[in-house]
Image (cartoon, rainbow, N blue to C red; front, side, top):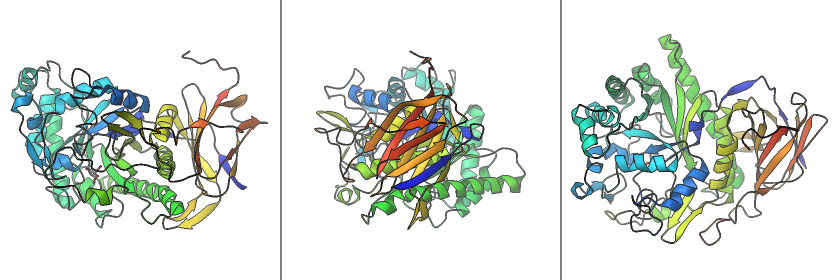
Length: 505
Ligand code: AHR
């Protein structure tokens, strides 16, 4: 059996978990909106056409913020098309995904849905085919109470109170040649600075996210971040990162090693933010918004067969397996390990499109990746402890990587939760951790996500093929935690002080 050791100190805190790292994303893409969250003719729909079964699953998942309306879609979007009487809304070509957008669902419907789903909006503006003027009008429509053209327009649409949207993305993936209106770093940096400045003239309390690179492998990575921030450092609060992984070569060890690459990506972007900060002699720090991350590759070939100009096709409908769930757990652990700088993150996406939740006319179900997300979002609140991992390592295309992804989070009630993935595909791992700084602690609960088949999937008929079960064998004796992590498994081990009464019974 392999052996691993974790080391923590209760006073060595990486950072406070910002709950917005458990965000997700709804784009006008495939069946995310239409048939996903909105399907007026479904027996599951409420009076506004929102699917109640999906709302239930979103609430259970624990998603404090949802990015909207894109994605590539936003770079050609006219937000005005999606507000006001539905019968007057135009159907448009969506050039990003080559479909017809009916605009029957738009900004106000999204805000109503978000309220029902218990989440907050992260709104993106179109800096591809449009610019600061339209972005300014949109902030006015959303956040000014009344007495101006766009605020009164909102009121005429039945929304007397402002939406008060406080988190805004300045465009999407503007470095990508696939993006409508894509730009050089200098062009984008300038437009982001000006759009941000003007949007803040309307509402000084908004927070702004500038586009970083749309992936670590982009040729312009590094230069882009540096140039963009050099232009808009004073106007923005966050820089975005996007990254998707896929097991295209069917090499699971390599695939699970992707967390090392994600870790390097985050460290590199932090370094560039701080380098610009030093050059500009600023005290202000730029934090990170990892606002698109997930596994995405299963549907790539199928998607090439979709005919142009249909509506709500089955697009990007990855069916996730067990190894994808392990990687999602590892990616979330990686985000937590950077809690000092990663303040926002969005699992891309939420429903039907590369998503933890799937729907059909018969119902909604949880994909494998739903479970690690729900567990970590639920129990990963509080302070991240600097968690040193001493575990066996292996070589793969991501470099020399650890067999163990792990992090401890200490919650408000001073309970401790360990999240850990044993990436070894063959061997169990005996884990130990000195917990003498936590006298009287015992194991409260232990969840395990494990399956003998890395390719096992969940379906509507069998939604629990891959699902958490109770773990056994984790124990604290003489101030030492010991646990056996089975080969290829994810663990949530909750620890509490013995005799501690729950605060919220
Ligand atoms: O999430 C799917 C797409 O991936 C988004 O529209 C785009 O931003 C990214 O390339």
